[in-house]
Amino acid sequence: MRLTKQTNYAVRMLMYCAANANNLSRIPEIAKAYGVSELFLFKILQPLHKAGIVETVRGRNGGIRLGRPADKITLFDVVRVTEDNFSMAECFDSDVTECPLVDSCGLNSALRKALNAFFDVLSQYSIHDLVVARPQINFLLGLEEMPAKATASA
Image (tube, rainbow, N blue to C red; front, side, top):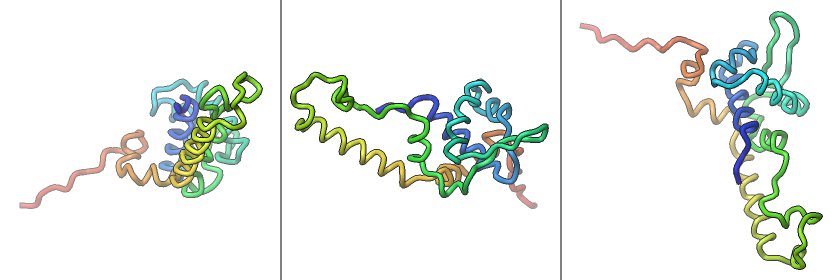
């Protein structure tokens, strides 16, 4: 299974917001940090907002922030709202297939188990987990200056 760019950048946008938790995040800043178009991020923002994963604040000083704590937003939450289709094979779409085994096929059953295992793993990881795994994320995203190195005293 391959996730779309929409899901990839949705996770990145949420990581940015989590790393910038004390401030509102702005789409132009997020777009610059990741080198992606603002229009693309605005498109991604809509399903995330509708699902309550992000909140938007309108106005001149507006922006976006996480709709709930980063440790309460799982990767599965994001994938569920950003991916259109989880069909791993034609037989997942029973209205499309002409296979006479569709309701009793071992392949279909195995693929469903694999997909459920994939979802189970995604449910075990939160946006918070991804952010704390990168101690220098704020620097890497341009949210703060490079941490000063400890100077040796003579």
